[in-house]
Length: 309
Image (cartoon, rainbow, N blue to C red; front, side, top):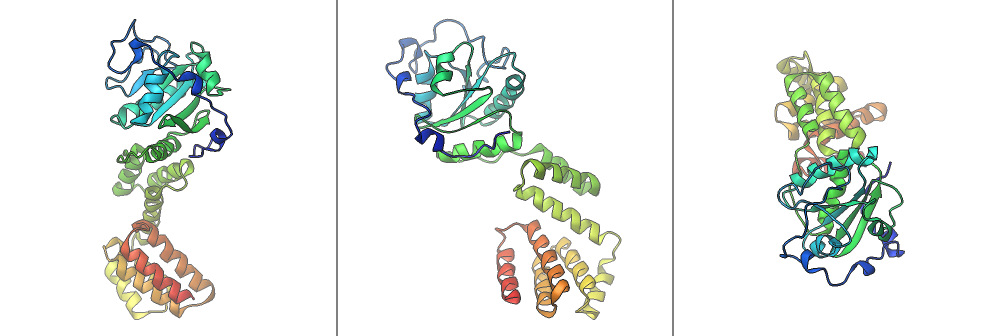
């Protein structure tokens, strides 16, 4: 499976030459000119799909590639999908791209190319297998990948393409994350953990899923504990590692994260060996809940570094 990422290496070696596709567009394909004939019926893997009603999806042929891909990419990123109806992977992946294009609100355009009807375009893009996807920005391809990739990876790739094209859009909500959060809020910790881990399997750097999984850990550790009793125990035994960790968890859940960080940084200073490492790892897990951009986390990280070194 391909790993979509922004890189121009394959293009700097001359793998794609679009110069022969440039030139005056036919009158019927120039922007603003009325189309000739009916809509394309060979959309790759799209059945009777149209353009999504807002121009977010277009079917491209040799006659229209200049206007629909090259010229349009001067204003917004164009994602060119190469596929063909009747090919299982193409039929599976096309609807995902079409849905994301429709959701984008016009931030980018999906240009579908049927390799059976337009083999010359596929040849120009050096398409050797389908499905294959290219990103075109400013009249030039900037990245490509082949095969079917998970939707989470695809969304990340599209965000990178939009950034390369100078487009800023809000990250769409991930329904899987909503499901995991709902399970966490309802107290179904096993379901929440499974859901967060599934997201992380597809997107290992998903900060929201990492934070959710850390919250599951805190919720499990404080289950059955009486907050007042636990805090009192920690107060009376400042060097009891287990008591201090539990107190820090309770403080985080009570909205007293900075107090929890200070508690554990102090404990790091007073411990050594395995105990010190246990406290450090616990503190880092609590940082994950807030995220790296939280000012309190940044301050606590500096204090932790000072305590360690």
